Length: 76
Image (cartoon, rainbow, N blue to C red):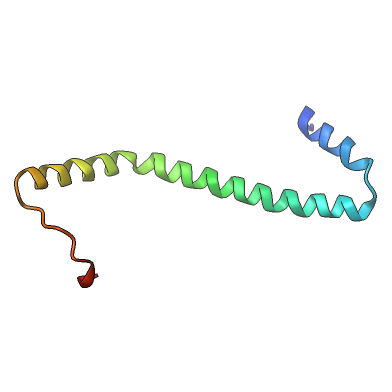
């Protein structure tokens, strides 16, 4: 069963000539792929947020304890 949004898109596409329908389909494929990438990135970020917070705490503590040293970009 199609959602209202899919029904609306289908009706809109049916008003277009076939070459333009194909253009819209290609655009939607790319757009949906980007959306899916963004959703995967967000999920990954949310799953690692605690580790990022802990790493920031450790870094802040090491700086406060004088254990950190400036990054030498030439050594990278």
